[in-house]
Image (tube, rainbow, N blue to C red; front, side, top):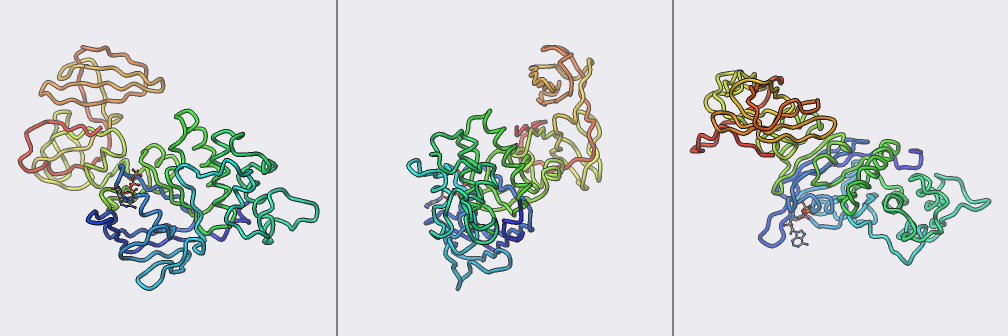
Length: 370
Ligand code: ATP
C-alpha cells in the first residue's frame, strides 16, 4: 500500500515567527519531524497550533523563519512555494467536502484533469504509474468502489476517510491534519481515531496533526509537541511527557497531576505522603509531581475519603489530608473504601519531577492542576 505514497520525508521548521497585528502567535518555533513519524501538536485553544500547521502548508506566510520538506526549502525570506506545489496534503477540521459533488469528484478536486478518474476502468493504467489517482486514493483508505456516492450518504467515519483520500490523492510527501476528529461525537470519535491510527501506520507517511485533546495526542502520536502561547514547551514521546514533564504546566496539561508541597534536599524530598525520590536534584521548598496512580490508599490515619469515582477498569478517590491538602488517587480495582472513611496515603511511584515552589506562594500543601 505504501508504494503509492511518496517516499518518507522529513519536515523541518526553523525559527518561525508570526504575529497577527500586535498578537504574536508563533514565537521562534523550531521543529524537526523525522521521516515516517506521526507528531501530535498539542496545546490549549489559541496557542498557535493551526497557524503553525498552515505555515507548513503554505496557507499562512510567516514573518520570519524557514520551512523545508524532504530537504526542499519551501519558505524563507526569499522563497515562498505555493501551497499546491509543496507536496503537502492537508485535512481540514471540518473536512471541507463538497456535498453536491460525488465522492470521486471530491477526492479528485485539485488534481489535474487527466489524473482524476474515480472508478478504475478496463485498460486503465496500473496504480502508481501516474493515472487514476482518485481510485488509488480511495483504495488506500478502504473506500474503493464508493466513488459514485455522494458524501451525504456516507457515515461520519467514511466522510473522514474521503477527506483523507483527497489529501492523499496528489501523493503528498507529508500529511497535515487539523483537529481531524473535532466534529465527531465522542463514541464515533474513538472508533474513527482507531481507524485513522491503523491507516497512518499502514501508510507510513510523515504526519503532523493538531489537537487540544491529550488522549488523542497520546494515542495517535509517536511523539507529542506541547505548545503554549506560541512556543513549544516540550517535545517527547507520550510516555516521556507523562513521566517527566518539563514544567508544572505541562504536567497538568498531559494528565491528572497532584503537585504536592515538599522540602527537597538533593535527590530526595520530604512530603506529607512520605519521602520521594526526584528525577533531578533540588533544594528547598518544591512542588512534587505525583500522578494519581502512584498513590496508594489503605484504611488508616492521616486522610479522609471525600469522593469515590468508579470507572469500571479502575477507581479514583479524592482524599483530603489532615493538613488540608487534597489529592486524587487512582487504584486499579473496584472501590473498597467509602466516602468519609479515614485512610493513610503513601507515594508508591518511581523518581518524579519537582519544581521550586513559586516565590511568595501561600503555604498551600497541594496544587492540583487536574
Ligand atoms: P484552536 O485550537 O482554538 O484552533 P490554535 O492553537 O489552533 O487554537 P490558532 O488558530 O493558530 O490557535 O490561533 C492562534 C491565535 O491567532 C488566536 O488568538 C487567533 O485568534 C489568532 N489568529 C489566527 N488566525 C488569525 C487571523 N487570520 N487573523 C487574526 N488573528 C488570527
